[in-house]
Length: 263
Image 1 (cartoon, rainbow, N blue to C red):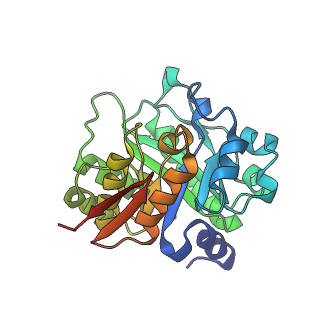
Image 2 (tube, rainbow, N blue to C red; image 1 turned 90 degrees about the horizontal axis):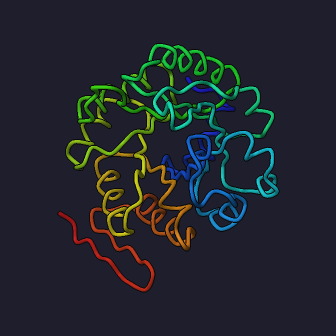
């Protein structure tokens, strides 16, 4: 049973049990174009995105977050691209609380060299989150040497997140609505799909549409938002798909009308 605090915070992150999250925690991994002026992006997507994911330093130094309406998720994990899969804790739940977070997130790579440590940390963090009434977003991926990314490995990854106590699980899209429906079925908490690599708006919207039809509770899109010329337009289009999803979808973008007549 979730306590009142966690329920209230989850409602901010997932209004109507759907969510559009914009992660901008990429700077620890490597220099990434588009996040050198985070406040500028936050101003453009505030009240359009449901939540953003940031590291503690970006939150501390922001001039905008104090007045931001969009929910704040503080990321607790990190690694550089030199050891990309070997995530370690770089922040605490207590620090996130002091920064005014509505939730925290961790990253676990199933199959990585330090998988055991990541599992241990995820289990401990989930218990601390329960103590504080803090929602936990677990970013769960099958990644590591000789690890094949397929429906079965993604199902395993999301199930681990559920078993360790996550309130929301984020993972990669498996390529089709049919296969992703299997992933969602294997996890009894909301599943959101990662936006992945940079792609065209049409490709992005189609992928998100299929994931939502498969049962995904939303999406976490980073590069495709903060590297866009008009990030607010990308978020508006994603919002229509996620919060107004039907089997017959009409999505308006950049002067074009894309109509999906359902399949």
